[in-house]
Length: 115
Length: 115
Image 1: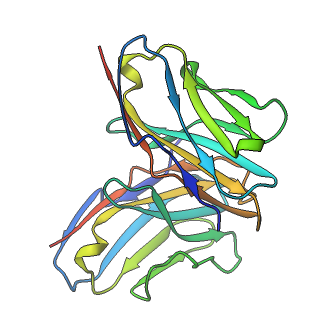
Image 2: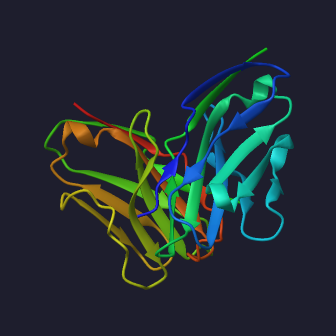
């Protein structure tokens, strides 16, 4: 079965620092990749997604992610974080070997940005 | 428009009691998912409904867990004879279809505490 690893469980940064959150999945093939974000007190919501085409995906609020097929990775990046980026971030994958349309989620990364 | 709603937002119950959790998906969304999120963990898939097809129950942890959905509307997750390990946030999500390439829209969750 597909599995998703998010290597950083807790990240603490100061404003204006650069951010990279790791995400690796286990089974290759055709995959759809997602990053979801949960701001304090709010619902989980989509940050960005990759289905095909350009492996560098732009999302909301200046976030981007790069799909590297050879590394089974889909890391999330932002060049300069803001206090308002404090949230929980989840990577999710559908497809891959077996082709499951049910998303497999990573355990999440808690990001705290100090002003 | 209205998003996914869940009720109750919080539920405290005694060990051994039954609980019912409700989810109202976005109108027109044929796919509905239930997840469980334990503290510090990722989202654990429980069950999935797609239109009038038989639900995918592969994620239900035991026969104490069951869920129903009326057509393409409301869904109810029932946990019988609750145990302390059932304490978690139960999340519901809906999507237009279950092809794996549609984003999921999440509700606010129900926080279940079993004492």
